Length: 492
Image 1: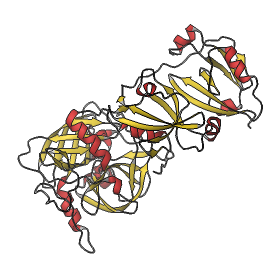
Image 2 (image 1 turned 90 degrees about the vertical axis):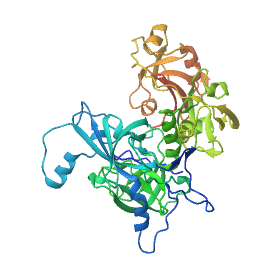
Image 3 (image 1 turned 30 degrees about the vertical axis):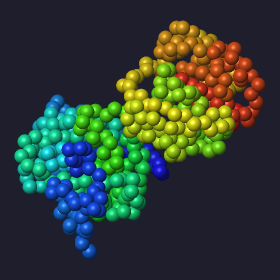
Image 4 (image 1 turned 120 degrees about the vertical axis):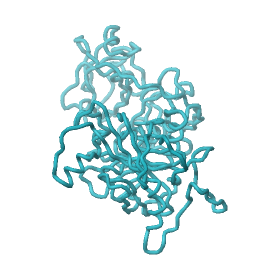
């Protein structure tokens, strides 16, 4: 999968919902050719020559308009989704008046508009988590104009998905099916259906422009990219194929971009949405490691054949990784039979798996591959480390452009580290290779060239024979997180 980093863009999150066909046994997959589709859920729709009207007509009844109201919010006072606008400010009636009539209404309660799609005739719907995250009131309006209050069954901000239950539904509602997004190809035609700027049941056409896009929205980025027109108010609405099945849930656009929109793949929607519906939250797999990318210098230092892979910087005590024998300095190169290109592959593969899953990894250690089998645990809540404040103990200089000092009990408490093994960086020479590598005062050096460093004497012993041109790898700890850094001595 090709990873594309779009850090130079600002991403705007667009509001909406998406619903996928469900039966009493769970989430629908497309019916086989020999199976008759149910009355409540359509299978595929064959477009007529020269028009996509049949596809649009089949999908539109299941696409809904989502209205939210938030309490205690003012424009600019909202928590923002990654790169996006405030959740209830995504598109509002005030935006509509401002854009089309030039008027600025008097301030009032903050309201938001978005899109959604029904996946179960009993009134189960999917939408983006950012749309309903702070909502105190949610209303869902169908194509026929029927309005239903709705409650959130579960929301997952990491993937920006939420599941809603429409209340007061008296009969089966129109639904659509979730397709297999793994079969989607770049170049496939797709339709985006939703309520951009409150204009309900708007249909736009485009193609799948890319797959597996990483836009910095979260650790599980794996978006479909499309050039079908997506605007504020489309978020949560479906991206459908020519069979009228959902291949993605529209979630983000590039602010100021033209024809660059993103959708959550339907296979991820199936996994996350079902768990939100059943349990109200997502239980994620946990390996218990800190990982980082491989730079050319680190790959050379560790003797890895290529820069593809994820370098393990730290293994948590008593974690599944530790129990399986993984260690800091291992490079994960394969996960469940699939090559690992970067840390994102590991984050998604582990984080989207269920706790208790048996996972097979291949790791590179000391010039050889080794296979490791790990039973995943459940991801714990994230915790934050306090900022380090090193004491002014006189440092010991080294040829790396670093000044280090002992890691005393007082320093260990200040840096909130559990182990007193290592040395603390006190000074970094300006314009040195260490400075360019991002090493900072307060970093704790745990290893030099894979050799443990417990004292200043250990550090001096492992660095005194280094010469210009040598590549040195350091394992550092900063604010509780470990990472490797490679330095080429004498590099300009």
